[in-house]
Image 1 (cartoon, rainbow, N blue to C red):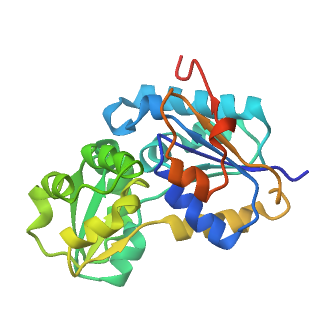
Image 2: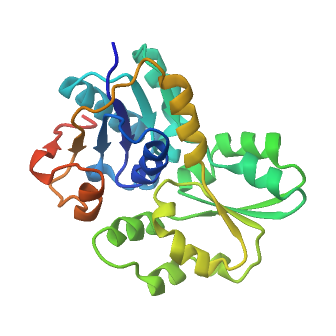
Length: 259
């Protein structure tokens, strides 16, 4: 039986993944679960992240059953895809920082990975770099402040001065490609392009969308109502709710997440 897609994220970053999926499957039925109470995950320890995401998925599944789960968060994906695959029989898709395509496009070049601390300094990133560096020099820069700025940008204009301050340690360097290793960061694409003029900004949303199309055939539902679940009493980003036809009046607040 076909069912909606479930996307989970620490906040609004998964909207960048949802954009890519809807470009391929415009009539897809989906639920979006945002853990605003725990955002940003880069500030949490591993055990907290695992507990929160497991609780978030369970709570969303209690609201309605889904046909496929997308963990639209790089930090969570590097930690817990197997936890979810052990618990659910449906496909689970994670987000992988786009190191492979970036280094393939610029062999022997200079690449910067922007990510949250758990992703940038984790063993999973070490594994990706050892497999796919292709002779490229890869710098890593970790920031949770950029996640906060991305969330704020959904409620008001992007603050270029604040973004420039957050990126100051790396903004003076030249890169061939900048990998946006957090799904929040494409929300700041125009500002980051100014910071890293001349570099190609690369994220993994297109690859995730292709994976959903491949795995979701026969599993996913089309044309039904969509849902928006949140874990904090915060005003949802109005412009995004309108864009995705997610009525604010139908926002469902999930409680006791991570307990």
